[in-house]
Amino acid sequence: MNQRQGGDAGDRGGTGAVGTAGGTGADGVTGAARADDATDPAGTAGEQVGTIGRKAGRGLRWSLLGNLGTKVTTFVMGLVLARLLVPEDFGLYAIALAATTFVMHVNDVGIIAATVQWRGRVEEMAPTATVMALAFSTGIYGIFWVVAPYFAELAGSAEATPVVRLLTAIILIDGVTAVRAGSLMRGFGHDRLTKANIAGSLVNAAVAVTLAANGAGAYSFACGQVAANTVTGALVLAWAGLPFRLGFDREVAARLLRFGAPLALGLGIEAVLMNADYVIVGAVLGPAALGFYLLAFNVSSWVPSVIGTALRYVTVPSFSRLAEQRPESLSLGVQRSVPLLVAFVLPVAVVTATLAPEIVAFLYGGKWAPAAGVLALLAVLLVVRMLTSLAFDILTSAGATRATVWMNLGWAVALVPALWAGTHWYGIRGAAIGHALAGLLVALPMAVLMLSRAGVRLAPVLPALVRPLLGAVLAAAVTVTLAGMTGGPPLVRLCVAGAGGLLAYVLLAVPAARLRELGARAVPARAR
Image (cartoon, rainbow, N blue to C red):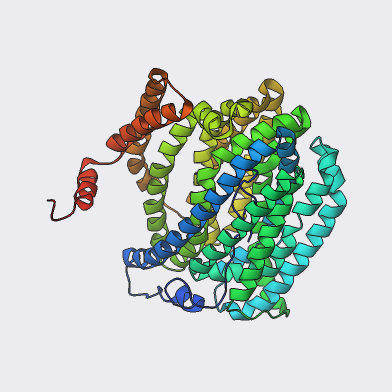
């Protein structure tokens, strides 16, 4: 369940990933069998990519369904909470979320990813991995219980201390379920993953809204998330096909640490990257300004949360299986994946950037207007986050976990001073500018460098990116023009300008032959 936690009201991710282990997955094949059934040495690289791609496709459909269901629930919850609470409440929760995101990334020392990537039978490593996950989760929670007052003070709001202590308790649940979640993702068994996540999101919304309506303030966020993870974790244990056994094997532990420790360090740096802005904005500008910034960041995170989280559930097992084959299999899989991801993300980023005031006004009302300028700038980060997350997953799948450390470390070195300078210079908009520039000028080049050093050939990707990039430029021009020409309430401008921009993008970015093919499929045979 080592994903970013929360909901749209305060979330840089989704509810925790859940899963079962060792049982049948989405297509009735055991996780162990799935790890090996695409390893025919006689098969070509293309055939291997296709076989694993079909399994990943099934898993991705379930992941998308689950993420869409949880995001719809938490989106509605966010709209309600934005009207029940004040920006200061959002700011206090943002401080607790920053601490929780960090501990969620490092608490299991990469056990989930190690389970997915494990070369061998999961049953052999599960007892040792479970003990390690429990021990590290408990130890890290104890440490954060002690340092919570100092962390809250650093972020500019000492009153956030009890919220930090409450919300970070979810890592204890993660320690119990980590191996089972990893085993499920390994076997592409995302059907039960989806059901558990949706159940958790419903509990989250019910608890948070009830508490907010009764004056609980920032505690409504934290209590809702703890309740959600408790339900999610219970479903993991109830549905898991992997017996819950404890044991310790030094050789297995050493293998897990060799893989997981660098990954946990890389993820910890990633957590700093995604939450340093919370700490800096809170310390410099206070909880009210941080509340506006949080809301803008959440809106910019919708696509990375829904699509990115769903992809992460299948990219690691998919690329891990490809990395076991011939070297060209992994490169070919990446070359097919990157253009599709870029083509999907760019139009969303364009609409978000150009129609940010309309989005904020329509969804949250006039009191949240200062968040619009931040949202427009963070649209750049939306694209960067999707691409760097994919790069991180590819490197993890290839076993190059040390490369993920260097990638995120380089990003962090550039980001923290950029955020500090930007916040002092231009407030919450300056923080967004610093985040976007560090991602665009440092994170993406670092990702390309590390992938190249890992043996992934990226040059064939470039020609496939030309049409989407040109389509994005045209879509931005059309959207801005139509927004300026259209009167009426924000919803009208959103519909008219957004639809016009998306249409312009599709007409330029998608080849004419592909459009004709899609049109032919859309028209029933009898009609033709």
